[in-house]
Image (tube, rainbow, N blue to C red; front, top):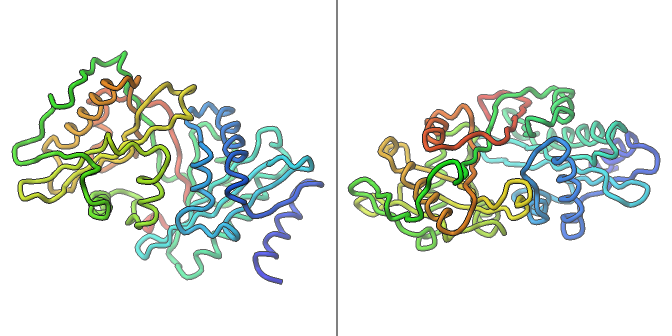
Length: 341
């Protein structure tokens, strides 16, 4: 019997009577899984929701082998009760498998979450067989106590905390003229759309090389998650060049219309990177202020972004100084040596 069949048999044996398990079918499952995830998030006060496209990328994007790395649980009535993904990022420097999953709140207490975490951990270990220093990681909202207990039950420990920050224009005066904010002498800005995509991917990797948990973005993931994603708003992005024309900083923008009812009409600073040798000169601040002005000009209620609370680049202090405040938080869990995270 193949290993994946053995793993499936072990999973099914842990499920309540009448429940079944199968690999995800991205086209069919994306919508009902997004509804399941959002039910769970609503129950813990998380305002950030998943769209069907988000789920599709999660179960079929990157290096995911959908047939082997995903699992969906169906109840006796055919309604999806839970899902799990072992999402591999197997680069040479920091090989990791990220665990994703959720169970429908109405089936909590029946052991479905425990069965799924056992299956996902098993698959993650298999994925990391060739990477002895690889780690298994997962992240959940600060209010997801049930999920945190599941992670702890399989030996994972909390290692990092993150905040989603927001700045609302009704609490901080913001103009509508991005051109008011000028870069330091010798630097120029241009629209993101005018730059070569591959060059900006390499710039991104260089900007984040010294960030915790970051690894080089592959062309596939760069395209799927940042350029082709339904929420991408490239018209709001910018590239900064130095006096010899080299790209040294960038800002990428995203919008999540599915969050309209929970956050209002907000524009996200998805990624903001400045090469280490150009930091401390006000470039990041200028990019943020220009972004705020464009968002205010175009009728958004404010801007949001996510940040590592222990960032060594001083990002937290920068955002707080500009006027961002925490809205919701997340916790990263790990199994393995944090030095390889």
